[in-house]
Each structure stands twice: as C-alpha cells, then as structure tokens.
Image (spheres, rainbow, N blue to C red):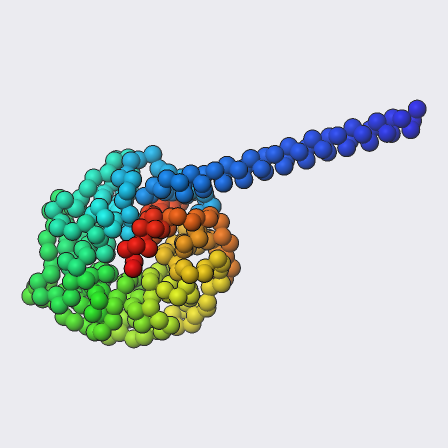
Length: 333
C-alpha cells in the first residue's frame, strides 16, 4: 500500500511539473508570437512615427494621426511637442501633447528638408538645393538667410552662443548677423552633421570628423576613416557613424574604440540615442541596444522594410521617425 502511495505521489508530482512547464512554454510562446505579429504589422504598414518605452525592444504606433506616406528625415523636441522634417512633405509640428499635427512648411518653396535645428524659439531648416531658412513664429512665416551664401546645399545647421553655422557640400560657413554676410571657414568637404558640447563643435564630413574648440574659428581633424553619415554626443562622448558601417566612440575626446555589433552587412548606422543607462542605434536590420556604453550590443528589434532615421527622447519615451527602405534606397542613388 505504501508503495502504491509513493507511485501515486510521484505521478501527481510529474503531472504538476508537466502542467507548470506547459503553462510556462505557452506563455513564452504567446509573448514571442505577439512580438513577431507586431513586428510583421509594422513591416506590412509602415507608420512615419513610433515610440518605445523599453529602450527599443518593442515599438508602438502613437495614437496621433500623421500623414502615412511621409518619409521622416529628422525629428527634434520643441518643449513637450515634436517637430518632424520629411523628405517628401515638408515640416510638421505637433500640438496638444502630440495629438494633432500641423504642416508648418506651407510658405517654403521646397518640401525636401535636408537639415533641421532648433535654437530656443527659432526653427532653422535647410531646404534641398535652396539654402537655409528660419522661422520665429513656429512655421507661420519663413525668412531666407541665404544672402551671399556660396553653396545652397545645406546639410547641417548649428548655433553656438549667437553664432550661426551651416555645413554644406563645400564646407562650413558662419553668418554675420549685423552685416548679413557669410564667411567660408573650412572648404572642400561635404558636411553631413553638427553636434555641440560645452563650447565645442563636432562636424561629420565626407573625409572624417572635424572638431572646433574655439567657437568655429579653427578646425582640426580628430578621426579620419572616410565618409561620415552621422555623429552624436552620448553622455559626453562622441559617436561617429561611417558610411562603411564602422562606428567609433570616444573614451575621451581623442581616444577611440570601435563598436562591435551585428548584423551590419551592406548597412550603416543611421542614428544613436541614449536613454537612462542604455544606448540604442538603428541600421537596416533594425534596432540595437547596449547597456555598457557601446562595448557590447544586442539586436533587439528586427526590421527589413523600414528604417529608423532619427530618435527624440521625451522624458523616458523614445520617438523614432521612419522611412521606407525601398524609398530611401531610390532617393540615395
């Protein structure tokens, strides 16, 4: 009888373990299936803007309505709202806590925005082949700042103190507000990005990275491995995103280490952003995440047909602006 009871208890224990195990497996499978379905949905019907509350692991479509065919190039925070620049539909600004959107580029003659920069309440944009414009009334009116600017292919804009700089296909120019003239500071490079940090300006160019620690008066090469697609300042460190797919970060301003991430074949990194103790970056394969300052990476969100071009952090939420990969590839040729 005792033997029978022992067998019975053993059988009951095994059955319980089986039930618990099955339940865990099913829950895990359900979570994975939901993630896969969400990713598939995003791939099937791209939205121009998404957000994530878990450092890029999952992305959700906001409740606000945004023109579905917009190809987002840049995003910037404007108070608690967003300004979104596109390749094909101009410039949009949100209002009422991101619930409504207004086209604020109606008076601009071009709809392909090559550069976006905010300085207090002034919005600066570079319009494809048409130079630089500013608005001081949230996009109601726009004023040209071209004057004698020698190259109208403005790809990057930054304002340091009261000094305005533009990066163009022929280097770096600075604007004299009183005389309304432009001075050519650095020639014969294509400038694709600017970042400012504690009085320094970092410029990503087609030959590498330039640094000015003297308010733009002089420029020095600090990293030269070819054409740079983008640069970022993350926790006081410089991140350099090369067209080759190589990404480097500075330990200090002048000491560098290479980021090892995958997959990365035939792709380069579009954008990097930091939130809390993590860094996220995007390439053609989706979103990559690091919790150790860029030394190691995990591929946390996979995509094939969309590209996250820019990130903006509002509180602890990251907003991502996207393009269709096929459309981006066509325009890049």
